[in-house]
Structure formats: structure tokens, C-alpha cells
Amino acid sequence: MPDAASLQLRERVWNAFPVTQPAFAKLLALLEIEASREVPTAAVSLGARSRLKINPDFAAAHCAEDPALVMLVLHELFHVVLGHTRLYERSTPALNFAFDAVINAQLCLLFPGPESTRLFRELYEARESPWCLLRPPEGWRTAAERWLPGAVGALHRKLYTDESLSYEDLFRLLAEEAEQGRGMTWDVGALLGSHGEGSSEALDPDLLAEIRDIIAGWPMVELRSGRDQGGTERDFRLEHRERRRTAAGILRQALRNLGDQNGDGTGRPRISASSAAGIFPHRVGGDRRAAVLAACGTEPLLYSGELPHRAFRRGERVHVYLDVSGSMSAAIAPLYAALTPLTTWLTPALHLFSTTVKDITHEELRRGKGATTGGTDISVVTAHMLKNGVRRALVVTDGWVGQVPTEHARELSRRKGRFAVALSAGGDPAFALGLGARVWKLPDLDKETP
Image (cartoon, rainbow, N blue to C red; front, side, top):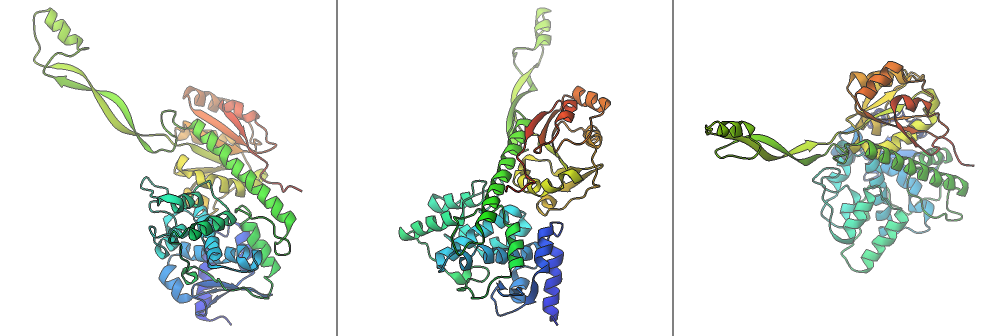
């Protein structure tokens, strides 16, 4: 029977994970979670029945909040699949470091909230090279974002932006830095998870399959005969990742096109030049009242005029309505992933619609949360727009939503709103006419390529 500490950890992990994503639920069902001081942080034991071992002292010190515990668990699970025991015959300290740097970056991009990234921010120093590569930079995704200068800073930026890079590339670049004597030193003991020499036991194939489903969109490396987990599957997942990245690019274009034409569309403040009324002791141009008084032989004491004025204005963000009806079920997960890095362009609430409209936060988007009635009706979207005074909106759908009610279309046109539609592959764009919306076509996100 599991001890009390193991039971407590198991309950925390189950409650903390976004189980609305089926892959996580399947993954956890294949693991026995065990509290163990035999490992410094966490590890997955290999064998017919895999165990996830977590050091309770480390968890208490660094994972008191559930989001940090999720990051620790995911780090170790992904390390097992991507690690040197599966892709390389021999491990090296630099290779271990490269794996951790990419894994941590991908987890932070997936869960960028401060409550999730805190684990890595607390463990590693932002201004100490190369350990800064294992955590987001100071002020990440804020106006105070700070990157280190030079080659290390360039690597860091690629890891934590849309550019990204594979751990194969990172390993090569880090090795070059070390060879040039730029202070690169490696201490495996400071890394999370298990970094031993591996085991002769095979990883549970069911567990391996589930983990690989979750990381399907991560940067992949070249195939290595005899040690890779299957060429056909890897080829598809690489192509699927490209389609999702293409979708993110199309959505970004649509959002930029809809955004405030006098700003960048992200809602960030900008300086705007204007004028303001003022009072002067001398005559200025444009004061018609003073001109009339002067013509009548009277000189006013004070004169009115315009003063140049500069003020901060905040650009308007875009409302996104995401179709979560039954016909969109296979595309919802990749669309969540594509929208997650674009949240700086969105209003604080993302609008999910079926036959109702439900708002979710950016954090709920990242955690895969949502709700649907299964059906769909575009009239609930247009009614929501009218009720809330929405002027800029992107509707992401397959188009099988019915027609925009005539009275809604007329009123939205009168208000001179700007609307666009991101249409899934094979969708029907006819309803977009009722919104006067431009249609952006997305790649096929819900089918595997043979």
C-alpha cells in the first residue's frame, strides 16, 4: 500500500494537472506516483510498470503551489522521452544541459504564467551564464523584459520566443561556446530530474506513446536508426507542428490586421499627439472672439488658443470568438495551442461559443479549460458583440454556424466595427458576408497526414 506521503502527492498531481486534456489523464493513469528521498528532485523509473518518484522535501521547498508541481512532473516525463537514453548512446554534461534548456523553455511557453515559471526562476539565476538559459529572462513578456548580451542572450531569446530552436541546434551552439572558453561550466547535480546513464529496461510502451502525443509539437531532431521511436510517427508529428505554427502565423496576421490602425494592436500604451484648449496673456491665432472685440475697439484681458498636448493612449485589443461546437472538436486543441502565444493581442477574455458564449481567461486557455453545449449558433456571437459594444473581433470557426440575423448585421454595420473570420480547412465562409468580414483560411489541423 502507498504511504501517506505518496498518497498526498498523487492527489496533488491529479488535482493540479489540466485533465480536460485527455492525454494528461491517460498519462497519469499509467504512472504510480511515489514519494521517495532516493531521488534529489524527481525521476521516472523504467520498466514494465513505470513509477514517478518525487522527493517530498524538494516538493515542499519549491513546489508548494500546484503549478510548480505540474512543471516539475512534466519536466521529468519529457526528459525521459527526449533524453540521452533514447536518442544518444552516451550522455555528456553539456547534452544534459541542452535537453533541460529546451524542455524548460517549452514548458514556460506552454504555461507562461508567473505561478508556473516560478519554479525555474527560483532555481536558476537570471544573470549567471549559462544557467540563465534554464529559466525565462527577467521581466519576461513585460515592458521590463531583459536579455543578456552576446551569444548567450541570442540563444536565450530564441528559446523563449516564437523563433525557437531544436535541442540538437542548442547542443551544437553551446558546445561551440564552451570550446571558445566563454565560461561555460556544467554541473549535472544542479539540473532537475534524473540524469543518470540510463537503464537496460525498456520504457513502458503505453507510457511512451502518451508522452509523445503531448510533446508532438515540440522541436524534433534528425532520425537516428535503431534508437529513434519510429520514423513514420515522427514525420507526421513534425508536419503537424508546422501546420500548427502556420495557423498561429495566420491568426497573428488576422489580429494585426484587425488591431488599432494607429497602434500595434496589443493594447500597449503609446504616445499620441493632440491639442488642448488654453488661456494666454497675448493674442494667438484662431481666437475669433478676440478678433471681433479688437474690431470693436476693445482689447480683451486674456486670449484663448490651442496648446500642443501629448498623452498616453492604449491601443484597442481584439475580441476572439472560438467555435467549440462538436464539428470543431478535433481542431480545438491545436487552436488553443496556436492562440496561447498570441494573448498579448487579445482582450483579457477569450469568448468560446457553441449555442452560448462562455468567457475564459488567458490562464484557462493555457491550461486547456473550456465548456461547450455541442451545438452552434452564430446569433449568440453577434448578440454578444452588440450587447458588449465589440468593435474589433476575430471569429475562429468552421463556418457551419448558420446565418447572421439581418437585424444584427444591420446594427453591426451601422457601428462600423471591424471583423474577420479564421476559417478551418473545408469550412463554409458564407456567414462571413453578414459581418462584412475578411476570411483567413487556416491549414487542416484535425487530420493526420498518411
